[in-house]
Every structure is written in structure tokens, then in C-alpha cells.
Length: 170
Image (cartoon, rainbow, N blue to C red; front, top):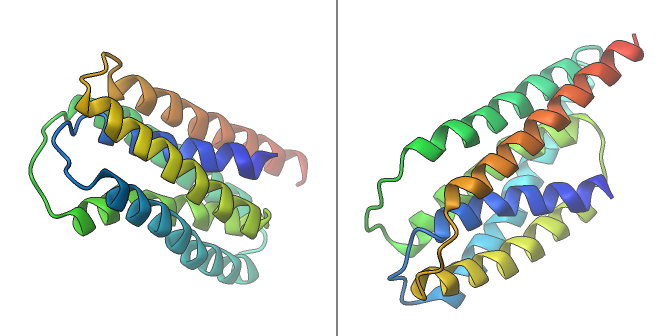
């Protein structure tokens, strides 16, 4: 269940970004690219996380909670930067998906179910990014900052719980 919720959380960051882009012409293509990258980056991150786990077994939960904490903090702090610039679709999809790499390193270190998280991240991202691009074109009133706050606080919460669990296991 945690993997499915985490897939949703990483998709919320994309929703927050894409709600700010009302003039995207190829919404389906951008949503598809972003979903695919939300699945590729976690595969790389999981493999790196598992490699790090084999080297840093005793420190993995602490490192994981620190990574998740700072990613959540970055999401919250990024709500102040609302500048929108025109960039190519592929670059936008990569930029929107890159954070899943670092998040997945943490989950790889925690040995969570890789395939479930990857599928969840891809499906949630595709559906929510397409909906948010559609809503942005219709000038939907919800602000992306709210979703970034929700995603950031969720990652902060997961990081704190991971840290507490690592103290209990010591």
C-alpha cells in the first residue's frame, strides 16, 4: 500500500507543475513522456538504492529518511518559484520526472516493492498529468502550490517515520 501512495505522491509534484502550463499543445504526448520517465528514473534509483544498501546496511534508513526529508522540503520551498518558461516537451518531462530518481533511491534502500511503486508512479503520473494539463487549459482555479505542499509534507512525514523506525531497529 505504501508503494501505491508513494506513486501518487510523486505524481502530485507533476500535477502542481502542469497546472501552471495552460498553453501545452500536445498534452497526451507530454503526459505519456512524463509517465514513462516516472517509471524509468525509479528503476535507476532502485538499483542505485539497492547497491547503496549493500554497502551501507546500517546507515540506509537514516540516509533514506534524510533524502526524503530534503526532497519534501524542496517541494515545499519550490512553491515560491512560480516562474513559467517555454521549454521543449521532452525537457519538461525530464525536469518534472527527475525527482522520482532521488525518491526511488530512498525506497530502494528500504527494499520496498519496486515493480508496484514503478507501476503506481507511472499510472498516477499519466492520469494526473493529463488531467492537470487539461484543467490548466481551462484555467481551473486550484493552485499548484497546494499540491506541492501536500506532496512535500507527505514525504517529510514518510522520512520522519522512516527515521523513527530506524531508531527502533537499533
